[in-house]
Image (tube, rainbow, N blue to C red; front, side, top):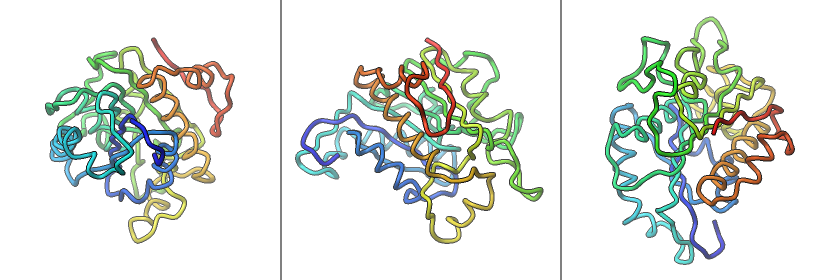
Length: 259
């Protein structure tokens, strides 16, 4: 945010082997609606959980030094989000697999993935395959993609395989929770249009993609803002309008919520 004031915080964990910069357009979208974003990730899931916990503990002391003097973070309104393996890490941290001094109030999994297949989860496993078993004292939203479970080509596995993807995460959520599946979009379609370098080029080669990234990215940004407004700021009009089909979204399906 650029205007003076106190703003909620969203910690965003990026996906496996992706750079922070690949999310710049999504970050700009969310930040422009009045949220402070801090983005991080690491090379190993267990280390990444510990790193995220350490960063969370640091926020109350160190974040304000990185912000303009007139922008103040509100650590009592703190959201946690993650994409792909970052979504798994976000759920792991919310499930207290590593202690934090601050309390999260909202959790968002953006096409979260817990390994290669059921029984092939990366350590530490998050999914238990027991319905509604996640004991989370916060609102949860899971965003999924229809093409994430589809192979791009015979040489590579799907980027969000069935058995360890968004469906399984949502099945274990308790209310209040929301689930949205963009059936015509892929696992990496929320990234910037131009992802540079060798890793950037692979984002168009490894996963099944939709026709373009802009609609999915715009939807993810919009629904994250609506969800954060509802559960951090108490303004649920946009989320309810999307849920009830009164407000159209760029990817064309209603959101399903429980509680």
